[in-house]
Length: 451
Image (cartoon, rainbow, N blue to C red; front, top):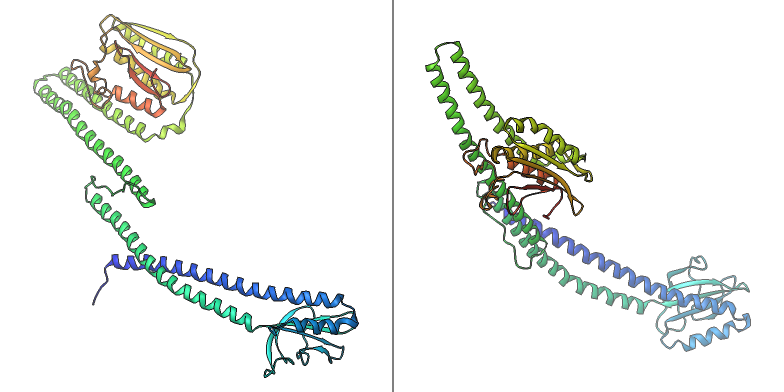
């Protein structure tokens, strides 16, 4: 059995839906026009009939018959019906032979057959009539012949039909073209998603130089795919870095355990092997904890826990925490803090960032040197600075030291995640981390931009 292509079915569905909407719109507009035209004709006739009733109501009874004949004489097209009837229904004057049966309510217009008296060869006609009671008990029957009105409405109806037929054909054509275009656009997105699911993240949707609404949507999808490709590349790179960084300490741990087991001869020897192994394991756990910390910062979930932070107290606490270590290393730790406005942030994360900068300064600064921690306002924005007496990070490496696992100084210890954590914390808060043009000063500006 022949099976229609799904894309063809989609095209017909899209095209049929659009064509149906356009046809329905055309029919609604035609109906509104037809109702408006018929109502306008009816209201025009009713206005003429109301004028007749008002005129004869104001005319003295003795003059009504003469006025009626004069009006009929001026009706050269023989389209007016006027007749006076007494209370018993007997005609007094006019061009209508008898009252319509049954007699309708007075004051409203109606369509009924009449018996004309001044139309040769015609004994019956259809007119819109109204019956008006007069002050002397007589009644005025006023009406308008509907032949011209029906002819005008017939021409209007024919015009609507002639206009609807090409409109329907045009709606079908536009619906088919629009449906094919919409189905083609949807099919383009579908094919793209199939390639992406298969692993090809380099695919992008075409966007014209002057995009329409769908083109703008394609541009947003391409931006999303760029971000997705970058994140996937980062995840792959991080996985490779983790494997590379953990391979060396794991290999060293295994070799140390094997050597220690072979060389240990007593309980003290075995305990020393275990202690060294535990130290290596602690280092590996520190790397894993730092990576999990970075992952938490990238999610940005901690923004919901932001609160007012007193930076002066936070920086002083960080200095107090590191003074014992600085004294053991023969380093002078100097803390100079000035009052600054409170900021919104996570106090524990900001403490971790400042602590990392102080630890790096003590680790890479000269032995017996001085580490200076400062807090001040720069153009109304709090500025945290940490400096040692060393040469600082070379300019060529400043864009690299904030990346994961980068260690520019091979004689140092650690996994190369400290400044990456500081950068992540600063970005989470919308702050800026930068290095001074010269020297070893590193600063966190608690706001966007650089001084």
